Amino acid sequence: MTVRRSLLALLAALPFFSLAPAAALAAAWPERPITIVVPAAAGGTTDIAARVLAEKMGKDLGTSVVVENKGGGGGSIGTAQVARARPDGYTLLMGNIGPVAINFSLYKQLSYKESDLRGITNVISVPNILVVHADSPVRSVRELVELARTRRLNVSTSGVGQSPHMSSEMFRQKAGIEVTLVPFPGAAPAVTALLGQQVDYMIDNLPSSMPHIRSGKFRALAITSATRSAQLPEVPTMTEAGVPMQVTAWFGLLAPAGTPDAVVERIQQSARRAMQTAEVRQRFADLGGVPGGETPAEYDAFIAQERKSWAQIVKAAGLSLE
Image (cartoon, rainbow, N blue to C red; front, side):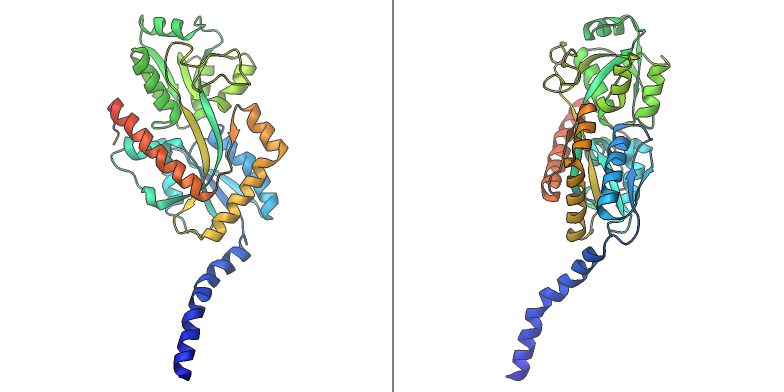
């Protein structure tokens, strides 16, 4: 009887002991700097979102949060780096719609799987914007389409598979024009190409083009949101401009699969607190974006749905990359 009671007591204690290591890890975390990998060049929306968040989260968590840019492969190189990292909460990904959702249906082979990452929370959602250089004679979407029917236009885009690339493809199809897409390893070099008038137009995430729109260097022709932006109320939606399409780009934190729930929850809560500050909310509003803050479960469900939706779009467009 004594042996039986001892065995029952041991079995009852097993759940406690199984949870103890995870709880201890969460209590001690973070003990060293945290790295947020940005799978794109500096200067784009992914990079902006990571740096805005890193500063606030570092103060909140009592450690430094370092942003590391690792562009290339439509965001897949940096994403794969995080997918292979130790699941201890010290290497995170500022992912976006491209490598986290679109790439799975666009590329025949990727060096990471959907199951290699787990969501933490969305950080910012933004529309895309169709812009031309201020010196361009084009002043509307209709005029741009008419010009494209007289000569083949060059279009800069921030990486193959990213939402600006897919938006450019959708615009080309719906407008019935042929263009030459010129991919760059991030928004900043793509924007620089338009600033230098090396290309005719681009569809960009709103935050990285907003400073140039406000300074008068870019002319905004249309926005991909369902309604007009409060920051650019004079700019029509794509649908209003005669090209019915809607695209919302999103950027959020992810961690390697296997990262303990308790650590993921701490990261999510820290990020959410940062996004609720007046400073960050104003910064995101100035960029034309909406802050996130979803729970890890909500974000995982959102990403799963986005993968399904974009798979249908990629299939309909007949796109496929090696």
